[in-house]
Amino acid sequence: MKLIVGLGNPGRKYEGTRHNVGFRVLAELRRMYGRSGPKQAFQGEIVEALVEAEKILLLTPHTLMNLSGGSVLAARDFYKIDDADLMVVADDFNLPLGKLRMRSGGSSGGQKGLEDIIRRLGTDQVPRLRVGIGSPPAGREGADYVLGRFSKAELPEIEVATGLAADAVVVWIREGMAVAMNRYN
Image 1 (tube, rainbow, N blue to C red):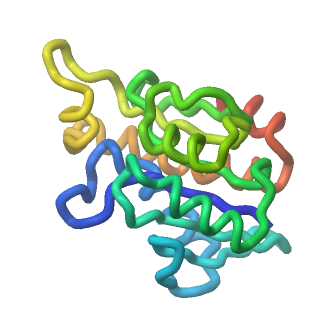
Image 2 (image 1 turned 90 degrees about the vertical axis):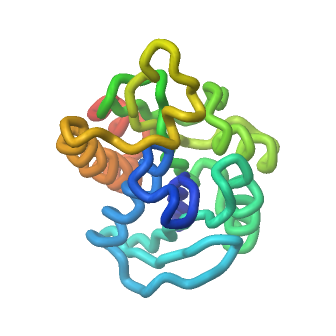
């Protein structure tokens, strides 16, 4: 069994923001593969999915982004999931809009939700998929930028990236990290 975590901030105030790209990707995976309605658990929402014959859990933490680790830790420990079978999907403003970068581990790269997950799990060897949201314009703070919404011109590109990110997660499930990285990085 694999656990896929999409990072974002809960609530209508944050819907459609750059920081909620992880939520978008999970919504696409739920649409494509979901087999149950959402259940409230682990300080978030969990949906059972099936990719071919493999059971997958889709977790959307309802904590704020920077506190996602507690939700992920609780789900991982409850289901006894190995860290290598946990995928975190998050935004990254160090990547161009729509660019994907998948890794099997490493630093948080400054992404606060991923940083909290690494800290709470006690390891940086957690697979992750970063979705580029573009860099903040000169003079704009990073925090304000990630909490802003995509422009109308950017929406088609982020919608394509959301679909590609969902496909990348499925390839990771079916064929492993090396194949997914080669195909989507």
